[in-house]
Length: 190
Image (cartoon, rainbow, N blue to C red; front, side, top):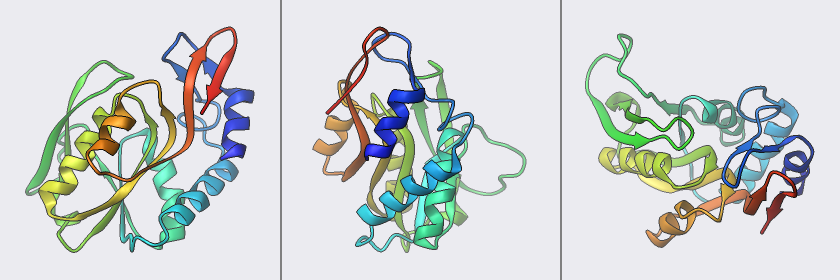
């Protein structure tokens, strides 16, 4: 998606060979016009899948999922990184190692919101090593729902997550695939 690549070049900040900061428009401050274009693109790419639910993980995926869901006319469900008092009853649970935070989370979704009748599209902001995506796939599988695919805004294609998850037979559609990053020369796209 050329618009997204241009925005990454313009406002993204590279901190080392594996950290790209896009907080000016994607995962801290949100550019809603850009998110609308991202949502339209995910809707175009997954229009033939019968998606009736979008699943993401808190917190950075929520804005992307919410904007995209309006094009699918379906609800958004987000996996929480901790049990809270407002989640009563049974939950699906898995463990996720966060690349960004270097922390292991117990990720949960209430069983009342994910069932075998659902056709789920997973959305997230980044795909690097694939731990968050693995966890979300596990939650979908536990529920018996059908996984239609995963939409990723930015994939660090030089890290193993995307290739590993595609090798499992999961359809992964990334809007910007990065081949390399360098603080001096910036981002190189595939």
